[in-house]
Image (cartoon, one colour):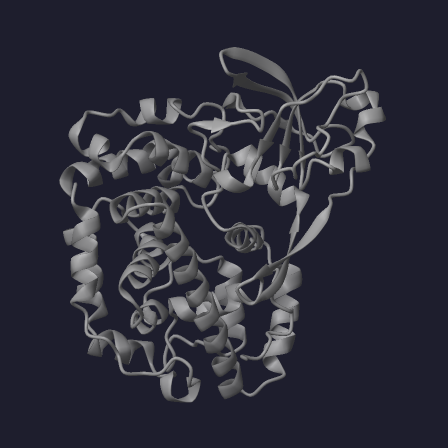
Length: 413
């Protein structure tokens, strides 16, 4: 099996690492802008099929199909950080790479950089990912770390060992600090999205991305790019047709029926038609909420019963209002909770300032891995009686899994 290259980048909380495997997943899942993209030499690129992921020797993807201008090309795809990596890895002298038809790189080549060529000397078209990414690369790394932590067996032992070495008060304070950093990340990423899009478009993309979490985020984002909220609200789109507009990129195997892409798109089309102005409603609704006075930078003054906060700040009623007034009751179960925590609250905070951390922390937990709940219970963080389960405790655990954080639950600055 080929060894993946790793690079280090500077993130919001210090350096973090990215593997070429993450870049390969971004390509495979279509987690980048697919419309109106071009190669380095200016040719229009339209990806029909990213290829079959090859985890052995040879090109990263076999049998891809894409259009270069009006010409349909079938061939392999190789993914690197930089154009220079092609020669550094000696692919230019390896016949196994003769079938490569597209070189995908993260960074644009510097002026004067020689393009990648096959053994026969054929120059390869090059596509640069960086300018087409939906998010900051740090967010991709963070989400990938969380989404691949489904088992958590090895991580569970390390996390519990580190937590149990502290007193119960220190454990909760430490996780509160971690949750605060995770909140800051989410708001930062939401702000970056709002720099690229207007409010309605950012909400539209965020909602579809959350509905596609975690295996169909890319295709859902492609649907958001191709079909606006206004179109879905005013026309008569068929969910099956929307799925068909992004061929060969959907994951269906192993999904519960509720997470099938057609089911999720049917929910969103119904949502768009019932609440075509839902982004405006979201902003108006959340901005009416009273801002708690607790200081999240001083954990000892902030840790309290989730049930008390939910009662004093009427979280059940606010949840119902978001569900009915904003989303028209179209997204059932924990996926709507995930929409609120990962989508709605960070977006509103990014546009209108802070003051929503406490709501986000004490909101109900959404699509969290079962292992995270078990860690919290075993460590005595939550017990269902004196300290209720809440989104913030889950996020505190998840932050410690991110590639930019040490496994020892680093102290706050």
